[in-house]
Length: 450
Image (cartoon, rainbow, N blue to C red; front, side, top):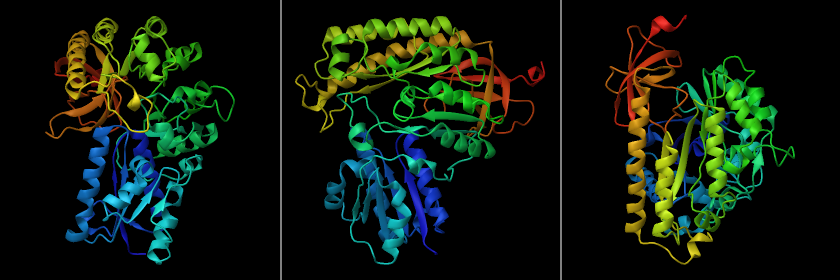
C-alpha cells in the first residue's frame, strides 16, 4: 500500500487516545502515516462536539482539510469522533467534501473501512455502530509525541446523565476496561519512556462498577504503582460523590499517585445542582473539600464550573462567586453555559442571554486570578520535584511541572539549569517568581542526591 494518511485530533485527552489508537490501527495495516497533510491521500479529522465552540472548531477544521482536495493529494476525507456520532446525516448533507463519517462505536472498523474504500467496495458513507464496546482501547497506540507523559483511558462512556451534557448519547453507557488490559498498556507506555501516566475517563471514580460490581480505582492504582519505570500516576475527572475514604487514603500514602484531585463540581447552588442533574449538595461538596485538605495538606485541587446555567439567578451566581473566593482552588476553569440540542437543559426555561453568561464567566475568572496570585506567591522560595516536559520556544528555559500541574490544562514552571536536562528527568526546582499564571524557577541539581 502506498496511500498516505494524515490525522487531525481535536478536543480532550480522551479524544487524543482515540486518535492514537486509530493511527496504530492504520499503521498495523500497512498504511503510511504523514504529518504533511498536503501529501496525504486520506485525511481523518477526529472531532469533539461537547459544546458550541468545539463544534465550530470541528467544522472549520473539516473545511480547512477539504481544501487539500484542491491544493494537495487528498482523495478521501473522513470525519470521526463525537461530531460524527452526533451529526452524521448533517455532515454528509452540508459538507459534501466529506466522503466517510465514522461514529464513536465504529473506531475499531477504521482499517476495514479504508481498505474497502480502496477496493471500491464501500456500501455506505456513514458508519455508526452502537457505542457499547470497549475492546478497541486494547489496540496498540501510535503515540503522537515524545512528551514524558501519556494519557491512559481506563473506561469509555458515562452513566451520570447530567442535564447539560451530550456525552452519554455520543459515547454510550459507562464501560470499564479490565485491570489487566490497563496494566498491559501502562507497561507498554513505560517502555516508551512515559514517566507520568494520566488516567482519564468521563469519570475515573466510577471505574470497575460495571464489570467488577464495585469501585476498583484504588486497586487499579495499586497495580499500576508496581510498574517500576512509572514515576507518577495522575487522575483526571473525579466525580465528587464517588470520592471515598479509600481513594483519599491512597492519594495520601502512595508516593507515585500525584496529590492532585480534578473534581468537576459545575456549581454550588443546591437549586442549580439539582437542575443540572448532579447528585451532590453544597454541604456535601464543601465537607468533601475540607476533608481532602485535612487528610492531604499538600493536595492540589482543580475544578470546573458552568456559569449562566438556565434559571441561574443573581443570588445563585453570588453564591458561586463566594464559594470560589472561599475555597481557593489552585486551578479552576469556567465555561459559559452552552445550550445543546438534545439535552434536558436545552429545553429548560430561563435561558440566559449570551452576554450575561460570558460576563458571569469572566467575573469568576477574575476572582480565581486573585486566588492564583496568592497561591503562586506562597510557592516562591520553595523547592518542588519537577518533571521536565521539554524546552521552551525561546530555547532558554526548560518547561516543567510539579505534581501540582497537570499537563496541557494547568500552568507550567519555566526553569533554567546550570547543566543540560533530559526530557522526563525529575529535578528539584526552586521557585523564584511568578509570570502571570506560570512560575519561574531554577533547577537545584545539588539537591538531587540529598
